[in-house]
Amino acid sequence: MNNALNFTRLWMLIKKQWFDNSKLYTLGIVALFGLMAMVFFFWAGVSGPYYDETETYVMFWVGLFMFGLIFASITFGSLSERPKGIYWLSVPATHLEKLICGIIYSTILFVLVYVACFYIIQPITLWLISMKPNVTIRKMPGMNEPMRAAIYIFFSVQALFILGSVYFERFSFIKTAIAGFLFIVLFGIYMNLVTKALIPHNAGAYDLTSLRMYEGNVVKIYQLGTWVDKTELFLLKYMWVPIFWVAAYFRLKEKEI
Image (cartoon, rainbow, N blue to C red; front, side, top):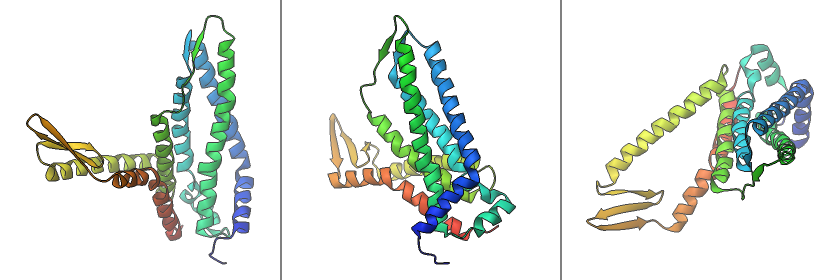
């Protein structure tokens, strides 16, 4: 078999994935829609008479992270069982094509389905609320910076859980969550030690590329070039997803049952 990426073979793999799991995916979509509707209708019933549309987006993000990470953690769940793993590895497709297929279902299609469910249920819920007497609905002014940051964080963390589904054969969700938490804690401790070792006692970090120095009643700020700040911000936003996907690819190549 040619190891180069073949789009015809990839498309056949995507269709095979659907036919093999169509019942599971269909039930999952119905369950997601029903659970989201229950949560929103419960919110509509217990809140009020003042409603804030922002709260619906808080529920959106909580559900997206919860269900998105769970779904990502079972992307390569077949590898956790020997018979299914042997069957999966014997499928005539390259590891890259199998990874892309997993990403399409766990990331792209899942997000599209989740967003579609939300934008069907949320307007209906708000419309039903507006029919109630003496209620006030405060509209959300627009997408704020925390919500933009949540987008980058979600896709990065979801890519990590896809990687975890390859590395951990059993309980991948729990193990990936623990590994991610320990990494953040250890990295924070390391950065704190490095900062204390390199920065004088009368100085402190102002932001990622700036240093604030105290000299008596005077505060001086030393800053690197703006291009450094933009580069760091760009890397923080976009580097994690490809890093985790590439790591998952090489781990898949090593996988044996």
